[in-house]
Image (cartoon, rainbow, N blue to C red; front, side, top):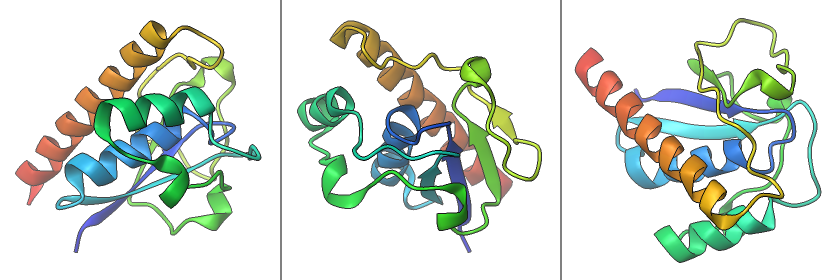
Amino acid sequence: MSKKVAFICVHNSCRSQIAEALGKHLAADVFESYSAGTETKPQINQDAVRLMKEVYGIDMEQTQYSKLISDIPEPDIAISMGCNVGCPFIGRAFDDNWGLDDPTGKSDEEFMIIIKAIEDKILKLREALVEEK
């Protein structure tokens, strides 16, 4: 039974969406990835969509959309993407806070730093969960 991992940020339009996409792409054999926010946006951040297509060939708009915490299954592991913009309340403590800055409105270079950081953290989480089994 694979664990459900939820990546949470306020708007569920950028960092948490990237984490969901990379979780599905890199660790679907170990855990199920979900993302959610305490608020939603009408669309996923377009810079994130473009860069994820360019770098990984993943079209987030085909498989993902902005959703609320109440729209996803109860997670086994809840990860905050970064509480510097105010931490969403999800009814319990977060298992981890990745402390990532929101790259919205910033350069592609800054976006890629965050995307690569998320990739590294996904791979570390995958490794940790494989060792737990």
